[in-house]
Image (cartoon, rainbow, N blue to C red; front, side):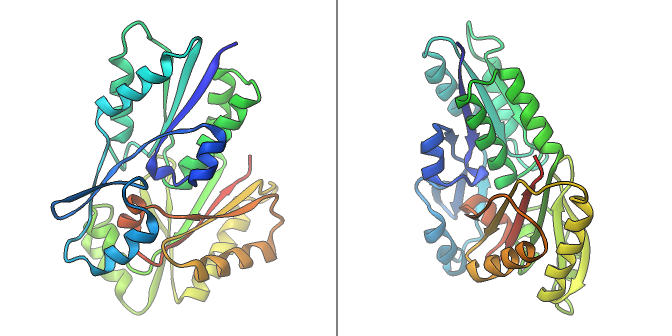
Length: 285
């Protein structure tokens, strides 16, 4: 029987205990404050990152893993007999992480076709949910083809909505333009953001005030999941548990949800979204 191993990167924001339980391997991205370099969720945890984000004179920068880092991991995993690897990563339009993993897979000797690199077209638990589902399917004895079909189906039936306190961090990180960031700071306008099917950050609506933004998310979600069952809801936050609890309560009051959990946004995702961000990751598969 084929031994299938799941690999992801640190932007998947999978809690450590769950990664260990499911034997998911993780390659960290890097985060830089001036000349200081940290490994995302390895040498810098969320509880250390957010205070540093507000106190440091340096705006954080992020960088992808090198192909060599992926290659070392793939080689180690493939030393196990009859092993194949499914490697699920941050949207290729947001980072070069996917390309690093893909390049590493082509550098393997005598292991052609044994590493399957998958573009999540997502971020944070939009990646994490796919990796967790893949790991559980591997444990259940499903084949590589079955698991890849599962994550493709999940990717097409996944919905993300997030609210940021400020668009400053997305603008400085190059994810949106200056005009959008300026507009968002005026008149308490709260843009409701999502990721499009390619993984690009997209504003799907703009409303005034936090309460109206949450109410609008409920309307959007009702349209997106009409006729479907919400299999899982993961509420994520960037040092804003109170806001996360409010969003969870609002969704749970209106929808039947089979599974709900909280996720903390890790340093790399938090560096782009900014402190105070809350998000809902919804799967109907």
